[in-house]
Length: 157
Length: 157
DNA sequence: AGTGAAAGAACGAAAAC
DNA sequence: GTTTTCGTTCTTTCACT
Image (tube, rainbow over the protein chains, first blue to last red):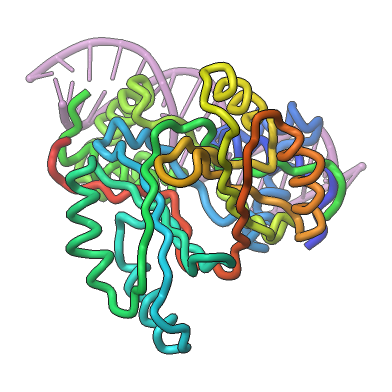
């Protein structure tokens, strides 16, 4: 699907606040309410908008400890990779897991309550996964920037 | 604010889909619409719900290249740290930046269109920031897991 | 804390331009 | 693409428990 300037502006607004009414959006975009409605439905149908999520303050719900784990596998056979990835997906402390280039194979973002819970996660969950060669963890001292909002330029993609 | 079991379930639902109507939520939670409404407003007022965001498919908007940059600063004086963080916050390719423990000082999540744009970002934006000692970048080969949804247990926090 | 009722606003589909 | 219309649904307030 080709996105025009209006679609991109619309996506920008919805990234900031998806609970705005179509009426509000119609003013910002200088369109009719119906046109806004149709554009949004199309963006949903084509999978460009994947969903709408409430953003929760993690400290307020007792999940204020954020760490990154770098993981190297023992071997890189297809089965090893497959089973590692399958196990990692099950861990709900792991919000993100990427297969990356470089010294380590995977980078994980882990959210737990505190250091004690992190220790417990490492010992009883993460390192019980087979074929892990070595791990290296970094703890977050300070959150400098943390957004999910993509910067959409006005040009067509 | 103390969260009870119902609040935690409500937050779980809203993390999954914040566009559900209060009526739908009232069925799931076995509460009246008004009770759901008041709980949500309270969660918003107290900052536990930080906002509502549309989740955009980054590949569909031409931002399919994801990289992580590890950064070490030259020195760790207060001013150095402050000015580095200030400059990083301005870069819209940087979605996340954390001050972390370990070998490197900062970990950045960077989203751009492709390798060419990444090269351009590194040469013309990131490494023009003063006091950077060294950087080490990893490119994402595969996204194994990527969610923003915190797992909330049913117990009070 | 909770409920139910009622007014006002928005949604969503259809019509016609 | 737009406007208008209309029935339906949701939001929000209010009186009350």
